[in-house]
Amino acid sequence: MRFGLVLFTSDRGITPAAAAAAGEHLGFDSFYVPEHTHIPVRREAPHPLTGDASLPDDRYARTLDPWVSLATAAAVTSRIRLGTAVAIPVEHDPITLAKSIASLDHLSGGRVVLGVGFGWNVDELTDHGVPPKRRRTMLREYLAAMRTLWSDEQAEYSGEFAEFGPSWAWPKPIRGDAIPTYVGAAGTDKNFAWIVQSADGWITTPGEQDIESRVVRLQQMWRDGGRVGNPEIVVLDVKPDVAKLARWGELGVTEVVYGMPDKSEAEVLAYLDRLANKLPVLH
Image 1 (cartoon, rainbow, N blue to C red):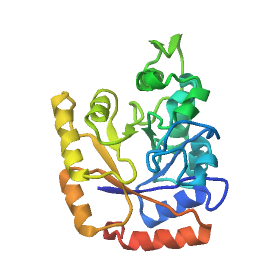
Image 2: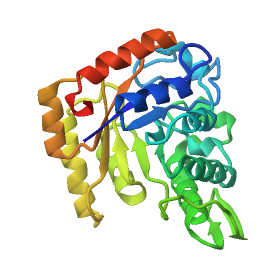
Image 3: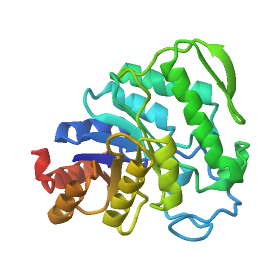
Image 4: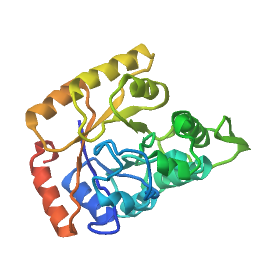
């Protein structure tokens, strides 16, 4: 089981590059950042944690671009995997987004993983022209279109939300296949069915309950759906517990990720050192 970090990036506090470099030095396996292009001041979409229009953290309005953030992290690291938790692909053009992701993967030596979300903030999506009731279909098409660009010598795609004729697009992913893609969403059968059809794994939501039963459920749906092997399962955890981590590992959780505090670089580095000491596998 791997251990990773997620930094809710903003224009204050520790930089993505410093956080990723520290994580790599301490032995962490992955480094994730989120995405919000903007937050409409007036909106109707309730936040999953607050249940209303209020936000639990003002960093939602201050979030750095994920691909710029990860590029700075790639420049000062050599081993740690670089991912999003989560990005919102439907807020972009799929051709240019595929180019950005493939370029980062190429320049980082094949270290990119793509965590995606359907987007809880439908007001934000609406500003990008995303039909709220079609966001799942749109995301499925965007991922399929990007995978075509990443894999085919002459790529083409025709769908409702993405379409392009035979095209050349390099670089391709270093590993010779599509970028590993995980979906960050609640552990429901509806979301698991989407993952089985269109992704490589699941990222839990913050505060997800009944992790163990939901892991078993996803694995069963994965097998029933005819998928080979096992899904990647990334759990967002708050506080390490050795017994709990052991159970998760036995069940098939592949990665556990811990968030960083919104504090100065010195304070975050001290926190990471304490966290690493609670995870003996890193030493």
